[in-house]
Image 1: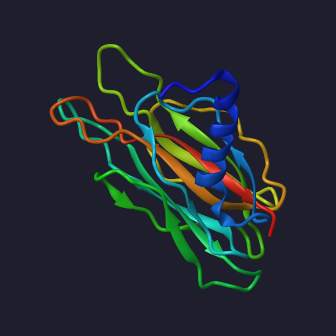
Image 2 (image 1 turned 30 degrees about the vertical axis):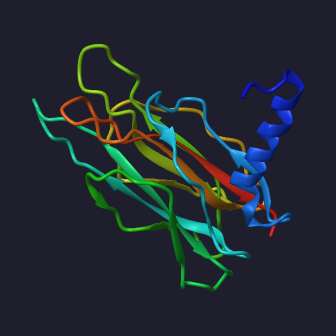
Image 3 (image 1 turned 60 degrees about the horizontal axis):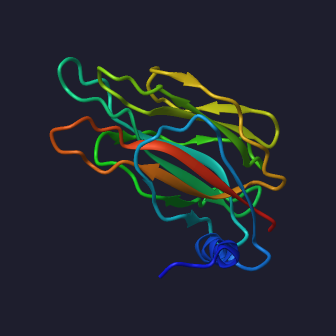
Amino acid sequence: MELEAGAKLPLLLLLQATCLGYAGADGYMSVIEVTNGGPWGDWAWPEMCPDGFFASGFSIKVEPPQGIPDDDTALNGIRLHCAGGQADLNAHVVESQSGRWGWWSEPLWCPVGGFLVAFSLRVEAPVTFGDNTAANNVRFLCSDGTELQGPGLTWGDFGDWSELCPKGVCGLQTKIQQPQGLRDDTAINDARFFCCRN
């Protein structure tokens, strides 16, 4: 069914609200993104911290270098470790879709009482002949100014920092390429994070 031009925007806004606004009418505020994400794959489902929780730490799933002629995928997953208060060490872990390769790192934490407020991705630019890996690593900025860099791989470059979350990061969504069989796999290509009001 073809939509009239005027109907496309309201439908898009409805879909966006349906996908991203389920944290509650007042809970979800904005999305922070970067401009250097990889080109392959599709956006998976969003995952949110419980109400009143914000991400105070993160961990990543990374496949180590495979050597020639094997296929490298580098970054395969990102988890947020959500805490409910300054002294709350009982974190709730959330992740969007992750790749099948690699192992999870130990969490990296903001100083006590701090939350993740911005991020930057390390991405290898596409190559015509060779092994593409797309996203290799992620780093976060904490609310007190501390920078936390994941133990990812070193291919590619870190791009610019995202915008800041006024209160803190409370959810994520990954862009992931599904396994390609005998072709080149890249796994995680991009990520976006959600900012909440409360």
